[in-house]
Length: 218
Image (cartoon, rainbow, N blue to C red; front, side):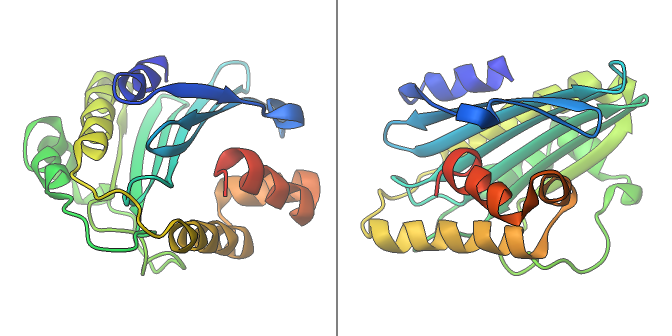
């Protein structure tokens, strides 16, 4: 996680934002540490690190909610649990206009991305509420502990591709904010693995406060 934050710092000034009561959480045997930042010229950045079950499960999450550049919303999850490794990088269309994401095609067409994607068992089957806004450059890989270093390499390449994408400055801030907020509210309404856990622990209103103020900064 620190390596990914450093990659962002190389391009944008990061200023820490208060996370308040959400900085340290304990939910269902997992301890969560959450930090939020303003990335000058980019938008809102949030990182969440979770550990639990006597060290048998570790999860890192990085979310970039762009408000200054017309990029898609970026969501990264890295999970190590019971000897299994998972990497998920998702791009959600919250853009006001088109954006060339060709750099991501180069990642999945070469190196570890191609080798891992060749396994059909790594696909995420079935319909989802977010299918209309999740961009095809999104990627999901699952493997063994021996794949950890390859996943880390891929995570770095994906973040670099995102930050290096040629995206226009946001001209209509209100429209961009509305698109970001629409995605977050849909996530809260439709739920997901992490979202449902937080809602069960804190209730819908408090979870919405967390997502709006700290996690996504909308």
